[in-house]
Length: 488
Image (spheres, rainbow, N blue to C red):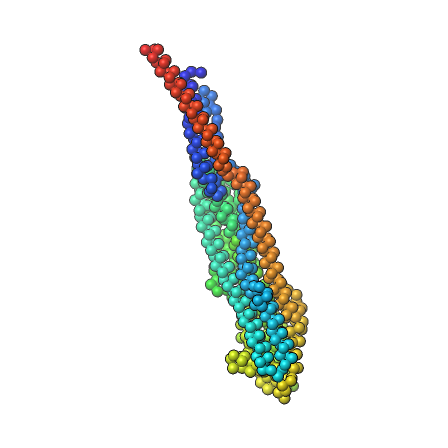
């Protein structure tokens, strides 16, 4: 080999070693960055000229990355559901504290039993009425919590939609740069990492599928099949309602003119934080709201007064009242928002100047509705009737998703059990999906991420290679010097 060829080989080795050292330094500097993939330089031998670098190669695992995206979307769905259920659990809290609708109903039933045992006691009558008021207040408070959950979910949906639109705009910028760089032969590996990170963030909000195209171009679709990005981002739209109406679902999310949430969705979303928030707003909360509303309706019905004069007057609300009073709610029909408006009739509330003894005697709606016409202090028929009404079987609206025929106290207990079961299922699902996401990301990172020990070892090898090439250049320089001196 001639000295010129040897010098060319040594110089090419130095140049390639410098490029490889630069890439290793880049790997080490970005080792802790999420979704940064390990880079390496592809080196080829050039006959007679040593070596040269052909391209920068990026570590990739497309199958594992897709698993990370689907796991992220599934975990976000369950996380949003669990957050809502944990908030709704505030209507129950510790059962021993007696603050749940079921516990308050049992306390009220016990107060009625006590009043029946001593019907002459005004204190027992007032205690029963106050227990009824605690029950009504408990239903009001639970309805308020549901409304808060729904409104916060609505706010979360708007924030999620805004984030999706922002991420799609960022995706277009990076994707365009990748396509142009690929066509021109530039190093686009760092931009590919950025694109992966955008996709990971996007999958947290909405379930996605990606399709790779020529020149590293990419299209994005929802997991329901709607186009999110195809050379340009599609518009994701949502009209937020500031204060949702009880019992009424919120507005749908629209992508590229197609509804992807709600009962009318033709290509519905399957996963992602967005769908979890919609389910919390329109499924979980509305079901629990229906259960509370049905409790309120049956309570009003169970404690209504009937005409005792024989005149055939209509039943009218008694101990419990509502905005539609004095009419009694229709049987078996859900009245949305009723749990938020049920009240104890002021005519029997001692703290509002009412007479609690009317609970024993009747007559809240006038003399025709009086059960104890002789005002007997030992009269218990009306109290016992009310106690029996709480144990009677009623028809409940199917929207409550509980047993259609049971007592109001049994229904309240079933409602508490439903909420706790839903919370447990969501907690288990969230734990599973979070673990699956963690394991998927770890596997992906182990195969594509930077191992600092390996990079530092490679850096030492490159230093030795650089030293060797430098010595070779020095030797060739000495030989050239000697040759030139000999010629002179």
